[in-house]
Structure formats: C-alpha cells, structure tokens
Image 1: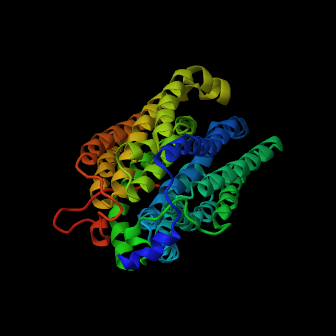
Image 2: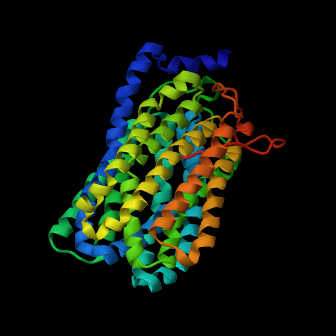
Length: 448
C-alpha cells in the first residue's frame, strides 16, 4: 500500500458523481460540434467539387483519396488501440507513445509499398498518372504516426486536443477546396493536394502543448512502463479487428475503382459524403467509451460517457434519409440524383456502424482485443462475399447494399459478445490478460 501513496497524492481528486454527470453533456456537445465541422465542410465543398470536376473528375478524386482511408487503418496495425488502452490504464504516457511510434513505422512502410503495387491498376482505370498516385499515397506513413498521437491524447482523456485537430483540418480543407474552385481549377490533382495539405496542417496541432491528464489515472498501473511485448501482443490482436472493420467499411471504396466506371464511382462518392455525416457520432462515442471502459467505468456511468452522441447519431441517420430525395439533387446538382438511393442505403449502414464501433470500443477498453475482432471479421466476410458474387454487375447501389449488410452482420455478433465480456475495474485486467488469456482465445477489438 505504501508504494501507491505517492501516485495517489499526485492525482487530482475525482469529481463528485453529480458534477461529473453535469459535465458530460457539454463535453459531448462540444466534441460533436468539433467533429461535425469536417462533414459539414464536406457538404459545403461537395457542390464546388461536383461542379468543378463533374462526375468523371469527382470519380478521379475519389479514386486517389479513398484508398488512403483503408490504407491508413492498415498502417496502424492495431498500435493506436494499444496506445489508447495502456495510456488510459495509467501507464507512462511517454513510454507508451515511444513504443507506439517504433511499432507502427514498419507496418506503415509495408502498406505504402502495397499501394505502390496497386497504383498501376487504378492509373489504368481512371487515367491518373502513377507518379501522382505514389506521391499522394505516401501520406499513409504520416497518417500512421498521427493515429498513434491521437490515441495518446485519447488515453489521457484530453478530448479537447482531438477536437481541435479535427476542427483545424476541416477549416484548412474548406479554404483549400473553395479557393481553387472559385479560381476555376478543374484538375482533380489540384484538389488532392489541397486535401493532403489540410491533413498535415490539422495533424500539426496534435504536437502542440504538453500532455497532462483529464482525470486521475487508475492507481493499479499509474506511472508503470509497459513492455514492448505487452504493447505488441495487444496491437496484433486489436489489428485483426481494426483491419477487418476498416476493410468491411472501406473495401468497397478500394475495389470500386477497379470494378466500375468513373461515373458510378462519382455517384458513390457523393453518397458516401452524405451518409458519413452521422458517423461523427460513432467516432466520438467510440472514443469516449474506449476511454471510459479502460479506466474502469461501468453501467450507467459508462453509458453516460456517450449517451448524447449516440442519440444524436441515430437521429442524424433518420433525418438525413428523409431529406435525401430533395436535398441531394439540390445540393449536388441534378446530375447526381441517381445517388439518392445509395445515400439512403448507406445511411442504414451508418446507423449500424455506430453500434458496431460502440461495442468494439467497450470490449476493447476492458482489455479484450482478440474477442472483439470477431465483430469486425463478420462484417468483412459479408463484404468479401458480396463483392465476389456481384463483381460483374457492381454499381453504386449494389456497393451500398453490400456495405450495409456487412455492418448488420458485425453488429449482430457485437451485441452477443458484449454480453459475454464482463466489466472490470482499473486493476481487474492485468497486462498479460490485456492481450487475451492463452487458454480462452482472446478478446475484443478497439477503434478510436
């Protein structure tokens, strides 16, 4: 007991339960607003892009940018999940961050080399020069490091820094897209450069300021330095879920450039832009739930950490689906009216995704990365089978249906597994158990 006293003395006293509950709603609303800036900017800039590039040019832009989304998740290879978990448990933030950087670099470089091999396929389909693809896709290495830094802030409970980064990126993208569009730029490569530059400017905000912690760290592990083996084991088990989730959500966008025309890809890109608006709630909810679960919160206290954003996400999906038939042609132009059905199908998938991310975040925060990976493996399996069966007939609407079905399968598995993973206090899961007990097959995935 004596050895824990200095750590206890250094920690701020926890806020009374009533004060904590009163602070939950404003904090969640602030995060929703901050994370909502990016999709709002996407809606605002989409008409500028649609009119400047037309469906074919919009498809070229999507063909360059969409593979980065999936590749960025693969590049992290579960390391951000481990960084968020161990930092949230009270391990030394500096040590966890250092190990995270070292662990993620090899996988990031490997993923980039895979993109280099894929580049000629996309170039032949869309007519984008291979050097442009190679230069653009190099951002995945920086993206992997950014994910680790985000996870560190998440583990510390410093959500305000994550809110700042998201807002900064979105505003930079607004300027980078609207400016060239008003100046008459019609080349997709110009907007690719604007997207990448705005990402870099937003990411720089993550490295400004010192660490600090939003609340007290769990006493059991306060200040302890994790071993590379601990982080590596958690990362590998979490990587299965992270990769499966990203592939289930984004494999459609990776494969579509090789499976359909630029016109259909343009319709699908607009549908994704609209349907992803409610997913800001999924991102914030998963972030909050992961932190709350890793610090030992349970029951009503755990639910309250994301109750506002979960309700907002469900309402956003329903409201957007109702408005889509009139809003899509009005905002994007009559040429994109065929996107309406894809928007509505993808909105159903967005609602399911909110549940999927919430389940995986809670189970991951309880130290079970292997079991939760099954949630996302189920979704990936549906995506792969759907594309394999429908490859010769793939279009925007069919791709949307496959995406929604994959999330339905993942959520069904997630709800079953969530009931099987008990809640534990901060000291309930030891470092070795965090990677999954050897005799029981592992545990739950995480995502930021």
